[in-house]
Image 1: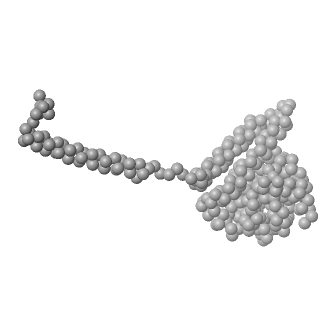
Image 2: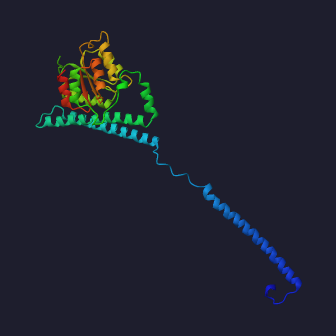
Image 3: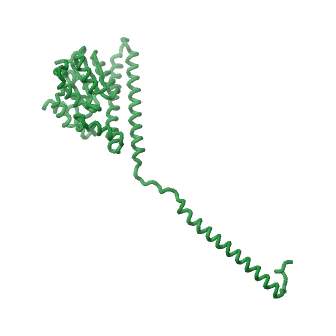
Length: 175
Length: 127
């Protein structure tokens, strides 16, 4: 049986109990204050340690530049392989004479014609890199401006703006 | 002046792929003596040593453009081919100002990329 279970207390005992409760209350208040402080700190933490803001929708130009250069590198590498294979076929054909050889040679010529795409892609990529502000490309362009005709280098035109071979022939003969 | 299959032809382009493409096509068209250069300076050096009848050059080259190379060919003193060489630009440049500048510099023919072997053959034969 504890003191609190007794039905009657002496005045001295009541004072001791009250004092004991006061001490417990003080300790409890101290704990509550600490808990409140802790909660307050925890509430502040999410703001202090918030992750970096989500990037805006603006594209990362350096990544775009690298991607475009990679496209150019891949096209060049692939076209070089195609040319090498066409040359190998030509070599294998050698001096063989057989029906249909002319057709085969004609197809090889068409492969070479199609490889024009490498140069046109390279020139278009160069223009895109200039627009993206690639320092390496702009530096090259700046160093080349002393050469005659650089100011007339526009590269391949979009189909709706390009002069056809026929138009060029007419213009040349009229000059 | 007609270009014969045995005449010397010089192909100039700073793109190794394009040099191969043009050279292989004109070889298939029957031209036997094909030489190549990867820039205007190298090409100028070669035309001082060989009598080319035909030069096929790109415009978009570095550091010397095809137009400047053409201007240099036309004014190169004592070059064996300077006066009578046929000079054809094979280029993606297709604006009127390019055609005018090329003509003023003395171009003989102008082929726009992408081109076909048939177009190239016809333009060479029309020189």
